[in-house]
Length: 307
Length: 266
Image: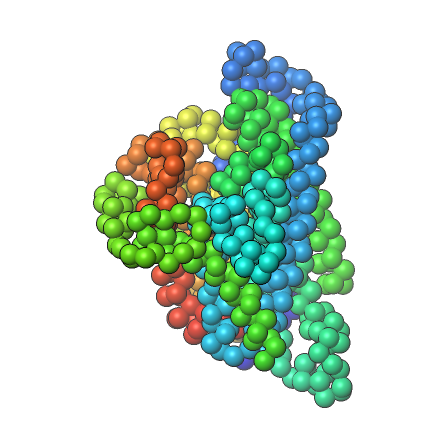
């Protein structure tokens, strides 16, 4: 049992004292990662930014002579109802499945697991992680079966006298959101279990001795101590959820109609089905911008906590 | 007691969809609802256990994802060390960039990446696909590895530095042994993410004999209309087994499934 150090803040050995060359040498281990990311990520992204302002297409006029069209792609996007619909659905999907669902359930599970018996803990942990370990496509098939009109969910609902419905047709965005909760909660659970295990037992015990009840202890002692983990987790799962593609695609293809067509699916349709590369990459840029906004919000949270 | 009951209820909800795949895999006439087959059979497994359907795709997946995960891990550990240990003006912008990259929709990048692969003659090569998959997992792996490395007290290394050990030696001899549970976590995350990745190998690999299991699972659909749910379930189980085993192996080594987090403390 070692004491945890305040990260980075403590990590400042002899900054500014060594010559420039020595500092560069210290950074050398970064080069393989930077090299790979320059070639295989930065390059394609820069190309994306270029393509978003052109009429690039796989077929038709945009294929033979690629022209610079300025903000035309963005103008077209924001005046299209399909695009605004997909933005709206993306926000609903992210809010329900990541920020509310995975985050809260993951935190709740890891809190409950600290006071449960070992057998229960192992059972639940295995079930939740089992759902997470399943490959995306397999998970999508399982949940399609689960939410199907003839599926298990309706059988259960009927058994307790509730009306069922064809979830994938009637409420597809709810179905895929629940599916994403089912699939993604394990991640938050692991992050929070790790964070909670780092809290020294004495701190909570002394709060208990001082007469703080369960909820007060949670709100004033436990949660403040894992703010870093909460912010990091929120950011990661939000960004992951924003770009979920395979799960929704395999479950509903964005349908029926466009009722579960989130931004990545809309983009895929435009870029690959309709061959509008320029327009598709413009949508990708909008998606990146949304991700950036979320990241900035959480980073502010992280910073204010560190200060 | 209450927490046990709530946990059990949630656990059952998570298990129900999994039950379908278990029961359907031993049911010759499997449908969409969870039902225990009247005549359990291993016929579905027999039907899919052959080189073309199962063995080769799974082996391809192991080569592809194992190679990528290792490459990711090596680069991530090397990159995390200076980021965690030395503070420079460069750290913050770099980490921010890395963070933005974790949210990058790979779907968006795939078109230019395909173009790049054509230029470099890398289309339909395992090596090229490994490099791209490793890169796409790198930002997240770096971020996570750095977080774990921050948890290893710097004071231990300072002693080593005083004794004259270089940075790489300190990383290898002191930091890594203390954070290898964290490394295992990152490795599992990375491998599992890649094992399930459909889109990247689908775009970058063409030859059927190079396709990993995540892509070949689609052969159950589209060609013959209504899929054979029983065989699909059996194949899904086989396809899922390697990551399950890997997870069990590592979590056992770490002392039970839920010591994962506790072990991070080092």
